Image (cartoon, one colour):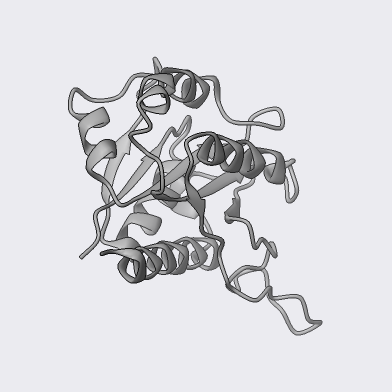
Length: 184
């Protein structure tokens, strides 16, 4: 089995719930970036030993949270030593608005992965975009570059839609299966 790690920041619990679904699909290790933007003591070692790194952040003001950005800036050390070169990467995000500029967040995560010499994995889920589609269908938001979820601003993490969480789980499974194919 490939070693897959999900690293994420969650401000209100929605992105954490999404990260748990991604991790369940990938049989992955979870690393939470804390409220101060720090990793647990072994976080950097876990990432270095991973075959695939799936990154998650809420979309705040059209990009990642400052806590995730602090982690990204601190990743300059593994960048300099090329520790993450040729690893698989993927990303996910959540915001309160249906669009909310989530694509900008995924683009940020993609760019970070490319700077590290990584290989990006998309969702490969067809969008639910017919007249018969329901908001709770898989990939209702129609994202191919990474998993997206939408949680109204007055919704608790427990009220997240099962379709968005299933999209996240299937995304995790896709990353793990891709990592398995690339594993020597």
